Image (cartoon, rainbow, N blue to C red; front, side, top):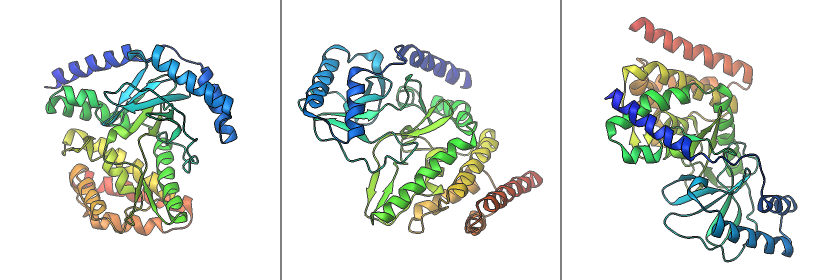
Length: 338
Protein backbone atom coordinates (compact mmCIF):
# COMPACT_ATOMS: atom_id res chain seq x y z
CA UNK A 1 0.00 0.00 0.00
CA UNK A 2 2.80 2.44 0.87
CA UNK A 3 4.58 1.92 -2.42
CA UNK A 4 1.39 2.54 -4.34
CA UNK A 5 0.63 5.59 -2.22
CA UNK A 6 4.05 7.12 -2.79
CA UNK A 7 3.82 6.37 -6.49
CA UNK A 8 0.48 8.14 -6.69
CA UNK A 9 1.87 11.07 -4.69
CA UNK A 10 4.87 11.32 -7.02
CA UNK A 11 2.56 11.48 -10.03
CA UNK A 12 0.48 14.16 -8.33
CA UNK A 13 3.56 16.16 -7.37
CA UNK A 14 4.89 16.00 -10.93
CA UNK A 15 1.58 17.29 -12.25
CA UNK A 16 1.62 20.17 -9.77
CA UNK A 17 5.19 21.12 -10.69
CA UNK A 18 4.33 20.99 -14.37
CA UNK A 19 1.38 23.28 -13.70
CA UNK A 20 3.31 25.81 -11.64
CA UNK A 21 3.20 29.15 -13.49
CA UNK A 22 6.55 29.89 -15.07
CA UNK A 23 5.94 33.62 -15.36
CA UNK A 24 7.30 35.22 -12.20
CA UNK A 25 8.60 38.49 -10.85
CA UNK A 26 6.25 41.01 -12.40
CA UNK A 27 3.37 43.33 -11.58
CA UNK A 28 0.88 43.87 -14.39
CA UNK A 29 -0.61 47.18 -15.46
CA UNK A 30 -3.77 46.02 -13.71
CA UNK A 31 -1.79 45.36 -10.53
CA UNK A 32 -0.03 48.73 -10.55
CA UNK A 33 -3.30 50.59 -11.07
CA UNK A 34 -5.09 48.61 -8.36
CA UNK A 35 -2.24 49.25 -5.91
CA UNK A 36 -2.64 52.99 -6.49
CA UNK A 37 -6.39 52.79 -5.92
CA UNK A 38 -6.01 50.73 -2.74
CA UNK A 39 -3.36 53.09 -1.35
CA UNK A 40 -5.71 56.03 -1.96
CA UNK A 41 -8.77 54.18 -0.64
CA UNK A 42 -10.77 54.48 -3.86
CA UNK A 43 -10.22 54.39 -7.64
CA UNK A 44 -10.53 57.50 -9.79
CA UNK A 45 -12.91 57.30 -12.75
CA UNK A 46 -9.92 56.91 -15.07
CA UNK A 47 -8.59 54.05 -12.93
CA UNK A 48 -12.01 52.38 -12.84
CA UNK A 49 -12.19 52.40 -16.62
CA UNK A 50 -8.62 51.12 -16.92
CA UNK A 51 -9.10 48.34 -14.34
CA UNK A 52 -12.35 47.17 -15.92
CA UNK A 53 -10.77 47.08 -19.36
CA UNK A 54 -7.68 45.24 -18.10
CA UNK A 55 -9.63 42.55 -16.24
CA UNK A 56 -11.94 41.95 -19.20
CA UNK A 57 -8.91 41.70 -21.49
CA UNK A 58 -7.28 39.25 -19.07
CA UNK A 59 -10.39 37.04 -19.12
CA UNK A 60 -10.49 37.06 -22.93
CA UNK A 61 -6.80 36.52 -23.60
CA UNK A 62 -4.99 35.11 -20.56
CA UNK A 63 -7.42 32.97 -18.56
CA UNK A 64 -5.62 29.68 -19.19
CA UNK A 65 -4.86 26.44 -17.26
CA UNK A 66 -1.24 27.45 -16.61
CA UNK A 67 -2.53 30.32 -14.46
CA UNK A 68 -4.79 28.14 -12.30
CA UNK A 69 -3.62 28.36 -8.68
CA UNK A 70 -6.29 26.14 -7.18
CA UNK A 71 -9.92 25.19 -6.83
CA UNK A 72 -11.98 25.03 -3.65
CA UNK A 73 -15.48 23.83 -2.95
CA UNK A 74 -17.01 26.83 -4.71
CA UNK A 75 -14.38 28.86 -6.52
CA UNK A 76 -11.53 28.71 -9.02
CA UNK A 77 -8.50 30.96 -8.44
CA UNK A 78 -6.25 32.21 -11.25
CA UNK A 79 -3.04 34.21 -11.05
CA UNK A 80 -3.09 37.71 -12.52
CA UNK A 81 0.40 38.73 -11.43
CA UNK A 82 2.71 38.41 -8.42
CA UNK A 83 0.44 40.55 -6.25
CA UNK A 84 -3.11 39.65 -7.23
CA UNK A 85 -5.29 36.76 -8.32
CA UNK A 86 -8.92 36.42 -9.36
CA UNK A 87 -11.61 34.11 -7.99
CA UNK A 88 -14.93 33.17 -9.57
CA UNK A 89 -17.51 30.39 -9.33
CA UNK A 90 -16.41 26.95 -10.54
CA UNK A 91 -17.85 25.98 -13.92
CA UNK A 92 -18.66 29.54 -14.98
CA UNK A 93 -17.13 31.92 -17.51
CA UNK A 94 -16.61 35.25 -15.73
CA UNK A 95 -17.67 38.44 -17.46
CA UNK A 96 -16.69 41.23 -15.05
CA UNK A 97 -19.34 43.65 -16.32
CA UNK A 98 -18.71 46.39 -13.78
CA UNK A 99 -16.40 47.39 -10.96
CA UNK A 100 -17.82 47.84 -7.48
CA UNK A 101 -16.53 50.04 -4.69
CA UNK A 102 -13.32 48.89 -3.02
CA UNK A 103 -14.32 46.67 -0.08
CA UNK A 104 -13.55 47.99 3.37
CA UNK A 105 -10.87 45.68 4.75
CA UNK A 106 -11.19 45.41 8.49
CA UNK A 107 -8.67 42.57 8.57
CA UNK A 108 -5.68 44.29 6.96
CA UNK A 109 -3.71 43.95 10.21
CA UNK A 110 -3.63 40.16 9.88
CA UNK A 111 -0.25 38.90 8.67
CA UNK A 112 -1.19 35.39 7.52
CA UNK A 113 -4.64 36.05 6.03
CA UNK A 114 -5.08 36.21 2.24
CA UNK A 115 -8.82 35.58 1.90
CA UNK A 116 -10.27 39.11 1.84
CA UNK A 117 -11.45 40.64 -1.41
CA UNK A 118 -9.46 43.72 -2.34
CA UNK A 119 -11.64 44.55 -5.37
CA UNK A 120 -14.91 43.37 -6.86
CA UNK A 121 -15.90 43.09 -10.52
CA UNK A 122 -19.46 41.77 -10.37
CA UNK A 123 -18.87 38.00 -10.74
CA UNK A 124 -15.09 38.24 -10.14
CA UNK A 125 -13.35 38.82 -6.81
CA UNK A 126 -9.77 40.08 -6.71
CA UNK A 127 -7.63 38.71 -3.86
CA UNK A 128 -4.05 39.11 -2.72
CA UNK A 129 -1.90 36.43 -4.34
CA UNK A 130 -1.05 33.92 -1.61
CA UNK A 131 2.12 32.83 -3.41
CA UNK A 132 3.79 34.98 -6.09
CA UNK A 133 5.55 32.00 -7.71
CA UNK A 134 2.46 29.79 -7.55
CA UNK A 135 4.11 27.23 -5.30
CA UNK A 136 1.94 26.49 -2.30
CA UNK A 137 0.37 23.35 -0.91
CA UNK A 138 -2.38 22.67 1.66
CA UNK A 139 -1.41 21.55 5.15
CA UNK A 140 -3.47 18.39 4.66
CA UNK A 141 -4.21 16.18 1.66
CA UNK A 142 -4.67 18.33 -1.49
CA UNK A 143 -8.24 18.26 -2.78
CA UNK A 144 -7.53 16.79 -6.22
CA UNK A 145 -5.36 14.07 -4.74
CA UNK A 146 -8.00 13.20 -2.14
CA UNK A 147 -10.81 13.01 -4.69
CA UNK A 148 -8.88 10.97 -7.26
CA UNK A 149 -7.36 8.39 -4.92
CA UNK A 150 -8.46 5.77 -2.43
CA UNK A 151 -8.74 6.32 1.32
CA UNK A 152 -5.67 4.09 1.79
CA UNK A 153 -3.59 6.24 -0.57
CA UNK A 154 -4.84 9.40 1.12
CA UNK A 155 -3.84 7.94 4.48
CA UNK A 156 -0.32 7.20 3.21
CA UNK A 157 0.01 10.72 1.79
CA UNK A 158 -1.17 12.30 5.03
CA UNK A 159 0.93 10.16 7.35
CA UNK A 160 4.14 10.10 5.32
CA UNK A 161 4.06 13.46 3.53
CA UNK A 162 1.60 16.05 4.87
CA UNK A 163 1.97 15.55 8.63
CA UNK A 164 5.81 15.48 8.70
CA UNK A 165 6.00 18.49 6.37
CA UNK A 166 3.70 20.49 8.66
CA UNK A 167 5.45 19.47 11.88
CA UNK A 168 8.85 20.42 10.42
CA UNK A 169 7.82 24.05 9.87
CA UNK A 170 9.63 26.47 12.22
CA UNK A 171 7.94 27.62 15.43
CA UNK A 172 7.54 31.13 14.00
CA UNK A 173 5.12 29.77 11.37
CA UNK A 174 2.69 28.67 14.08
CA UNK A 175 3.35 31.80 16.15
CA UNK A 176 2.15 33.98 13.26
CA UNK A 177 -1.08 32.00 12.86
CA UNK A 178 -1.82 32.08 16.60
CA UNK A 179 -1.17 35.83 16.70
CA UNK A 180 -3.71 36.38 13.92
CA UNK A 181 -6.23 34.17 15.73
CA UNK A 182 -5.85 36.36 18.81
CA UNK A 183 -6.11 39.53 16.70
CA UNK A 184 -9.46 38.23 15.42
CA UNK A 185 -10.60 37.73 19.01
CA UNK A 186 -9.62 41.30 19.84
CA UNK A 187 -11.32 42.69 16.72
CA UNK A 188 -14.46 40.76 17.59
CA UNK A 189 -14.49 42.10 21.14
CA UNK A 190 -14.00 45.64 19.81
CA UNK A 191 -16.87 45.27 17.32
CA UNK A 192 -19.09 43.29 19.72
CA UNK A 193 -19.15 40.23 17.49
CA UNK A 194 -17.09 37.09 16.89
CA UNK A 195 -14.76 36.44 13.94
CA UNK A 196 -13.19 33.06 13.26
CA UNK A 197 -11.14 31.47 10.51
CA UNK A 198 -12.66 28.47 8.72
CA UNK A 199 -11.11 25.53 10.55
CA UNK A 200 -13.32 22.89 8.90
CA UNK A 201 -11.15 22.40 5.83
CA UNK A 202 -7.33 21.99 6.05
CA UNK A 203 -7.18 23.20 2.44
CA UNK A 204 -7.91 26.70 3.80
CA UNK A 205 -4.41 26.71 5.33
CA UNK A 206 -1.54 26.52 2.85
CA UNK A 207 2.23 26.28 3.16
CA UNK A 208 4.31 28.83 1.24
CA UNK A 209 8.02 28.20 1.77
CA UNK A 210 8.26 28.11 5.60
CA UNK A 211 5.09 30.12 6.25
CA UNK A 212 1.44 29.19 6.78
CA UNK A 213 -1.10 31.38 5.02
CA UNK A 214 -4.87 31.35 5.46
CA UNK A 215 -7.35 31.63 2.62
CA UNK A 216 -11.16 31.61 2.29
CA UNK A 217 -13.66 33.83 4.07
CA UNK A 218 -13.61 34.79 7.74
CA UNK A 219 -16.73 33.65 9.59
CA UNK A 220 -18.86 36.18 11.44
CA UNK A 221 -20.63 34.36 14.28
CA UNK A 222 -23.53 35.26 16.51
CA UNK A 223 -22.39 32.71 19.07
CA UNK A 224 -19.80 33.75 21.64
CA UNK A 225 -17.05 31.46 20.37
CA UNK A 226 -13.46 32.69 20.29
CA UNK A 227 -10.56 31.41 18.22
CA UNK A 228 -8.52 29.03 20.36
CA UNK A 229 -5.67 26.53 20.47
CA UNK A 230 -8.33 23.81 20.17
CA UNK A 231 -9.33 25.24 16.76
CA UNK A 232 -5.73 24.90 15.59
CA UNK A 233 -5.73 21.30 16.81
CA UNK A 234 -8.82 20.75 14.70
CA UNK A 235 -7.29 21.93 11.43
CA UNK A 236 -3.65 20.86 11.97
CA UNK A 237 -4.00 17.60 13.92
CA UNK A 238 -7.50 16.17 13.63
CA UNK A 239 -8.25 16.28 9.89
CA UNK A 240 -6.49 15.19 6.75
CA UNK A 241 -9.06 16.68 4.37
CA UNK A 242 -12.51 18.30 4.48
CA UNK A 243 -14.64 16.42 7.07
CA UNK A 244 -12.11 13.56 7.08
CA UNK A 245 -10.92 12.79 10.62
CA UNK A 246 -7.55 11.12 11.12
CA UNK A 247 -6.96 8.01 13.20
CA UNK A 248 -4.28 7.13 15.72
CA UNK A 249 -1.07 5.70 14.30
CA UNK A 250 1.95 4.60 16.32
CA UNK A 251 4.07 5.56 13.30
CA UNK A 252 2.90 9.21 13.60
CA UNK A 253 2.70 9.57 17.38
CA UNK A 254 6.07 11.30 17.81
CA UNK A 255 5.38 13.62 14.87
CA UNK A 256 2.00 14.55 16.32
CA UNK A 257 3.51 15.32 19.73
CA UNK A 258 6.04 17.59 18.05
CA UNK A 259 3.22 19.43 16.27
CA UNK A 260 1.08 19.51 19.43
CA UNK A 261 3.91 21.25 21.29
CA UNK A 262 4.43 23.87 18.57
CA UNK A 263 0.72 24.71 18.50
CA UNK A 264 0.43 25.02 22.29
CA UNK A 265 3.57 27.20 22.56
CA UNK A 266 2.30 29.43 19.75
CA UNK A 267 -0.96 29.87 21.63
CA UNK A 268 0.89 30.65 24.86
CA UNK A 269 3.02 33.27 23.14
CA UNK A 270 0.03 34.99 21.50
CA UNK A 271 -2.19 34.87 24.59
CA UNK A 272 -4.65 32.71 22.66
CA UNK A 273 -7.11 30.81 24.90
CA UNK A 274 -6.54 27.07 25.11
CA UNK A 275 -10.25 26.59 24.36
CA UNK A 276 -13.41 28.60 23.92
CA UNK A 277 -15.39 28.44 27.16
CA UNK A 278 -18.62 28.11 25.18
CA UNK A 279 -17.62 25.23 22.89
CA UNK A 280 -18.11 21.55 23.69
CA UNK A 281 -16.33 20.78 20.40
CA UNK A 282 -13.19 22.40 21.83
CA UNK A 283 -13.20 19.98 24.75
CA UNK A 284 -13.66 17.08 22.35
CA UNK A 285 -10.63 18.26 20.39
CA UNK A 286 -8.47 18.33 23.52
CA UNK A 287 -9.57 14.83 24.48
CA UNK A 288 -9.02 13.46 20.97
CA UNK A 289 -5.61 15.06 20.49
CA UNK A 290 -4.15 14.39 23.95
CA UNK A 291 -5.43 10.90 24.72
CA UNK A 292 -6.09 9.48 21.25
CA UNK A 293 -3.91 10.95 18.51
CA UNK A 294 -0.88 11.77 20.69
CA UNK A 295 -1.37 8.69 22.87
CA UNK A 296 -0.66 10.45 26.18
CA UNK A 297 -1.60 8.67 29.41
CA UNK A 298 -2.35 11.86 31.36
CA UNK A 299 -6.09 12.67 31.36
CA UNK A 300 -6.80 15.44 28.86
CA UNK A 301 -8.69 17.44 31.51
CA UNK A 302 -5.60 17.51 33.70
CA UNK A 303 -3.37 18.59 30.80
CA UNK A 304 -5.83 21.31 29.77
CA UNK A 305 -6.24 22.57 33.35
CA UNK A 306 -2.48 22.81 33.88
CA UNK A 307 -1.89 24.61 30.59
CA UNK A 308 -4.74 27.04 31.25
CA UNK A 309 -3.22 27.79 34.64
CA UNK A 310 0.17 28.46 33.01
CA UNK A 311 -1.49 30.68 30.37
CA UNK A 312 -2.69 33.05 33.12
CA UNK A 313 0.90 34.06 33.92
CA UNK A 314 1.21 37.67 32.64
CA UNK A 315 4.95 37.36 31.99
CA UNK A 316 5.34 35.99 28.46
CA UNK A 317 8.86 34.62 28.93
CA UNK A 318 7.92 32.82 32.15
CA UNK A 319 4.72 31.56 30.55
CA UNK A 320 6.58 30.06 27.61
CA UNK A 321 9.26 28.46 29.79
CA UNK A 322 6.68 26.93 32.13
CA UNK A 323 4.67 25.61 29.19
CA UNK A 324 7.75 24.22 27.45
CA UNK A 325 8.94 22.45 30.62
CA UNK A 326 5.48 21.05 31.33
CA UNK A 327 5.08 19.68 27.80
CA UNK A 328 8.52 18.09 27.94
CA UNK A 329 7.58 16.45 31.24
CA UNK A 330 4.45 14.99 29.64
CA UNK A 331 6.44 13.42 26.84
CA UNK A 332 9.13 12.13 29.23
CA UNK A 333 6.39 10.52 31.35
CA UNK A 334 5.05 8.75 28.27
CA UNK A 335 8.53 7.43 27.43
CA UNK A 336 8.89 6.10 30.98
CA UNK A 337 5.49 4.41 30.77
CA UNK A 338 6.46 2.76 27.47
